[in-house]
Length: 434
Ligand code: ATP
Image (cartoon, rainbow, N blue to C red; front, side, top):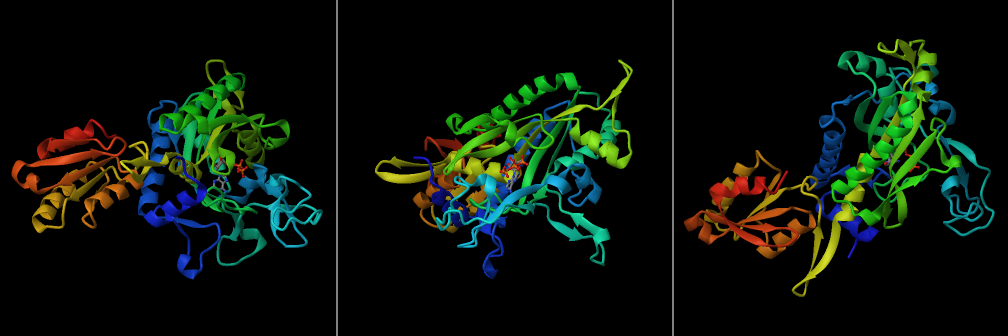
């Protein structure tokens, strides 16, 4: 059975994936902290993205740019002028909403009042702060609302130092900040979040082909990591949905418990950004093609995904409950590459001689994988806990181990058990784990 929203939120907080931020102070709305398991899952999602987008590709390199950049970056990019959402307030219950996200623009979804909304106001989405000791207009700066602009302003630095020829891409993973009007659905929409973005620069006449290429490649990434095909779709934006810079956009959407919603946007940003930064900065950001002896602005295809949002989707997608011999078990069928803990080492009982062996075994596995050495509670409960957090393998040390130096390896999905000599355990797991 697939998961409902409350079950996943419960699992996430109960098992230490995600905590409400500032909980001991009553919590800060829309801010979340990742716990010991959540940080591993999030890191693994980012690692898989980086591996597929950078490590395995000759044509893409990475950067890690500053969160706070020159404010002119955001003037050039168009964010200062148009990065706003239409905000309306219900005059009856005083709740605020994004007009473009309302099912019925005349009816308050909170209190049901008809025609109670104020005129829409443009709500600025960028966080502002001041750089330096005095808070004045001159030292106003913004927290970046996307990682993409840090890439555009370094286009020439990267091209020159990495000696790249078109087509090539620049990738970045990092935090972005948006003062969203209506954050919600747990970590789906937060005001501080993490993005995984890549800007792929190409000749203008090749942009359509590369756009189609990246649509396929990005969809395949989710499927290859085990996301259920029926829960994933590509949806083209209608003309009135397009951002100011885009000549075409598709969303990769996931079927969340509340319906289809965006995981990633893939856009043809044309030459909008490089041109805008060239005009604002006075630097020539055109690309020189020595073979054709011509100078021009490359077009850009951008797959822009959310790391935190995608992590949430993988968590939802992997969760299942099933009945095994009359018992219900919850299992996270995460791809082993994403699983927070790869192997749990469990002594059958709390006897000192067993714990000594299992601890030594756990230590010998730690250089290879994330390991949990769990000695509390009955073995059945420990298996269930590991199933619920998605651990692909449990290794049990029992009394026979003391004599025959063999352990029982239990696989998460099939629950099949193998008896393996300790000195063959690492190659056995290496065959089955990334
Ligand atoms: P939305 O329409 O949901 O506000 P968007 O279309 O503005 O999102 P993009 O600017 O395309 O989003 O950002 C790229 C990706 O960054 C999104 O697909 C999403 O995964 C992630 N993202 C954007 N805003 C948030 C947020 N507030 N919280 C978490 N992730 C976000």
